[in-house]
Image (cartoon, rainbow, N blue to C red):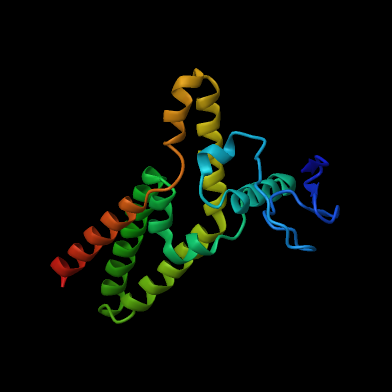
Length: 186
């Protein structure tokens, strides 16, 4: 597979240029392995082509913003799945504080009738913000891991790669804790 180093590569089957991160030629349908030239892939692990493509577009645009449907729809679960635990806790606590404050203001202003509407609007705004900024936050995490790993000896690098990737078990635990809290607060 020849990489022209301009974001495209040449398909070995039909010899047409395709996006560098594609795993199937859009012209002839030939499938092939993608060998990623940088360390970021070792830390991303799942959906490497999607994230590298997004990161490259954000870098080219000089922006830390890019839309991520999973971050928008699953907010904290997405952060936990991508092992951004600290950020998930910070956003969760900030969201709780904002919603609590909005609820208290609503109770004092109109006896609480607008509290649910206000809290729902705040939730939607927070989900939109996370959907827009999530890829940038994830890129920052991946770049930090790459920088840390660059200084490690080869035998320690394989262990360091485990700091990246995904964690399904943590998402399941988050769902169980969330469900238990909802039952307790009813």
